[in-house]
Image (cartoon, helix red, strand yellow):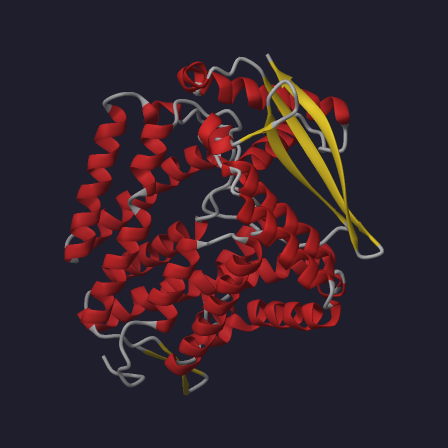
Length: 144
Length: 285
């Protein structure tokens, strides 16, 4: 035991090693995280946008007070909260509807001022084929 | 501070009192504004994460409570900047900060500023240890505070490197040209935020640029992964800390140019704790 403690005391960077171990074990629990941003590069990507009833894009910042990347994260995390991935259309519709509903409630007055009473959430799936960018656009959720 | 391991001096985090003061000033400027932003922007936690999964933190946003917490953190910052009652000030900043930032992350989008609280945690560890070592000089404590902050900061990059390897393995390098899709996605997300056509143009330009140069992309990404995995070398001495600090800063600037994503808290703490504000000789206290 004494020898083990002596070895432990001689280990440099204990804090560095401890926080690494705890973060990898605990995962996402602020302030710990595995910092997984861009940790893989699949051959597809997706982007979300807001639209009106006719499908014309609406600026998310002016409409709902958030940036586009936050809209995507909110939908994905809501999906995860339902225990599903975004490639499941039903889960995506449910998550998208919940996110639109919540944001519309928070920005109720702003939507009235802008004269917006319907919102659509679109997902654009991105791939590359023979070097060319391919975009597949689909409406995934609606509010109300 | 120069730490001896196996009888040899390896780890040197010596900094002057003036540098430590500037570190605290910039740290507070980066950390504190998030507190009122979170407390006065939200009213609930639609996607609870971390601690918020077990405890509802929306009470932090109640009228009166949000003002009180904002004022309390401001007071803690004032003591922290003065270097007085450091244990209490750092503990308050860490405790309240973790609650508020957890609420922030529970809006459904991670703000990715965990590094700020890990640094405060490292400083708190040094302060608690100092309570049990009464013969510690001011300079020794200061250097331990800085050294712990550096360990926490560099651990974040190391963990990120480990995550990449465990998620994608070497595929993180070989598949890196696929980031052209992420680049287009990132700029289009900005375009859909404000509908400025310039973001659409930048997305197409950078995405095609990367897709057209896959080998260069793989070399750059291999370098970035090596940097994250070996960034701990910055703890060895001040010169290495500066070099690795500049490389990490360059990496963040590259991310900003290619993806339009600016990790301000990370860039700030890299400048504060690795690059530093003074050209003083290594080992100077």
